[in-house]
Each structure stands twice: as C-alpha cells, then as structure tokens.
Image (tube, rainbow, N blue to C red; front, side, top):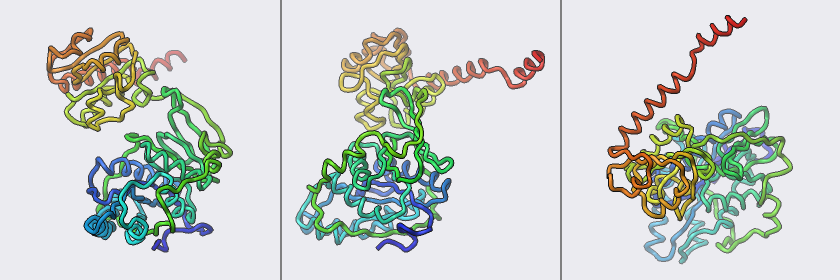
Length: 407
C-alpha cells in the first residue's frame, strides 16, 4: 500500500523526484558494487529535491524472479519479507523519503512455477503504472544497456521527455538545466527545459557522488502490486515509442555546447591519455589516475584487464576489443602491453610506461620507460604538476599591483 505522505496527481504537496533501480533480492543491501550506481543517482536526486523543495522516492523493480519450485519460491518469500528492514533502510539513510518494492505475493501469483528475467518492456510497464499517479518532475535511471532500455520505454509510455546520457541535472529559474555528452564524445551539451513535462534521464555512472549514509534518517516503505495479466512478452507498440525515441522536443528552451573536460571525453578525441591496467591493484587506483588527469588535462583510459575486473567502464578500454587511440601522449600505468592493447596505441606519438617489469612488452613500445612501483612515481608526478601550476599562476596581489601601475 502506498503511504498517504506520497503526493498524488492534483495535490498541492511538493512534486516528486524518483530513482529507478534493479531489485536484487538476494544481494547484500550494503554492497557498493551492486548498489553503488543507485546510490549515485539517489545522491543527485536528493540534491535536486532539496533545491526545488521536492521529495525523493526510489522505485525498485525486479530484474529477475525464481518461483520455479517450492525451494526457490520459499527463498523468494523469505527475501521479500525482509525488504523493509534491509534494502529500504540503506536507501533511507542515503536520501530516500519513500522506497517502493513489489508485493512478493503478487509476484508469485504471476510467476508461479517460472524462472527468468523480466523484459525491459514489462519493467517499464510496472514503473509506468506506479509513477503515473504521482506529480513527478524528474526520474533518474542508470546508464547500463538494460537501464536505458526500460527508461526510454517508460518515457514513451507516459509521453515524457527522454534524455540520455546525462552528466548532471540542475534546477534554475523554474527550468531544468541538463548537461550531457554530445555525439562526438569530446564536447558537452547543455540543454534547458521548462518544468511543464517530466524528464526521464539516464545518469552516467561515476559522475555523481552518493550522500554519506545517515543512520538516523528514516523513510516510508510501500509495496506495489504487479499489473494484472502482465507477461514478459508484453510490448509497447512502435507508434507509441517513436515520439520520444530521438532527441526530446517540444519543451526544449535552449541548447548550446562547450568543450568537455578531457577526463570525461571520448578517449578517441583527446591529445593526452593516462591509462591504467591490472598493475593498479584495485578500482581505487583509478582515483589517483583521475587526480593526475585533472592536473594534466588528460583523458582516462584502461586496459582490457582493468575493464574485465570491473574497475572502470568499457568505453575507456583501449585495444582491439576497445578503441584505437591516437593522442600525442599516452601514459601507461601498470599495463603489461598485450598485443591487442599495443594495436590500439599503434598511432600514439609518445608513450610513457610505468611498470615493475622491465621486460614487459609495453616497455619496447615506450619512448620512456620507468621501472618501479607506479604509486610513488605518480604521487611525485602530481606534486611536480601542482608546483608548476602554482608557479605559472601569478598571485592576486601581483595582478592588482600590475593593474594599478597600468592605471
């Protein structure tokens, strides 16, 4: 049952901002690998809601179900009964005012004896049924292929604007300011929409910051019923999708583009790249690369191994199964230099390699090879860059003195 505090259409209560997320019943509700992107979207939703005086809801929709046998059905019921205590509490602490989950009983009535993944069309239908009664302003979905599929279908079903991918959304003067990457991959595009029609936006992973959990923060949990006669083969007619399949129109006020920060740009279109491989040791190693990249004004790339380990998105991968790059400078950190990676940097002008192994294939390709632990090398490099930047920037006092002399 939906709490009375959740405003309905026609009410004068604050408008709502929603985050859509996969419901993985068996997943640890505090596992950042599974819930990290949801927490990022929730953090952005909370910040926007605080700006406009709105409230935030999270709608959890199952990605797959298993009622194929008595044991599986019992496990699903057990996991479903603990939703309010586990998954929802974690989301309340990170900014949600409400969390909606499916009623396990209605799930079982539909999928009794079945096991499988729910189609994007069905998940969009479920979300549309739940959200259509609320005064929605903004909906955040993930940037994965499945997320974009059901996000676009949701926008089509409700005739809302669909924007993908986005970097962030702001509210200013009664309008939405949406920043996204344009099709070239090396410029950002900023679009302004009025607030008369809800937006469904796909938020790029790794751009937003989650809100630190607050154990004292509380919210309300509600269950929704599965739509009657729903079936994984449920589809939306092509005519209803066509109106929102491309760029949003009708409520766009203005649009302009600007240079994109190199670290976010398509790696094929930047003149400097710093890339990480398995030698970084963990996902956290890319935090140091991002620090270097911001000082060097370079893009960030990765080897196939780093991508396969889940440390960074596939669109950062260099090589035969990734992208071929041609920057003036390529800094390879902890990358051994497999043949498929070397093929991807064949046209690079200058390669700098940092690796413990002096015999690594990347060393033969590099114009400069540094043998040793990459972390002390990069930390020293950061310090040198910071010092040079400080020396290159005249102090405010010197600038004022020069101005006075000129006057």
